Image (cartoon, rainbow, N blue to C red; front, side):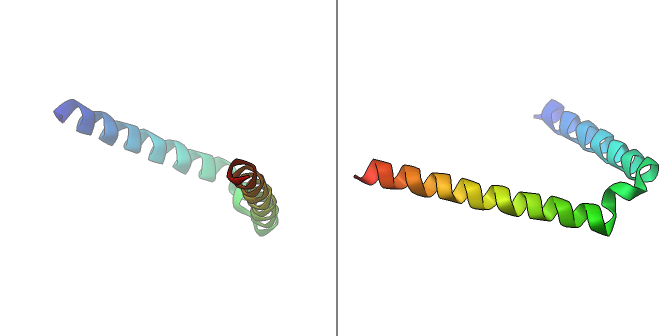
Length: 62
């Protein structure tokens, strides 16, 4: 129990440090243009996955 909490805390601290360094060295990664491209790509992917799940559900039902 103690070890899992300790590992979780250390992992969280490491990921926070890594994210901080990434943002500090690549500030253009979170520019408005890049965020818009990423959101558009995720939206298209979400619609594609919804379509696949819908087709699979229809195949299972009939």
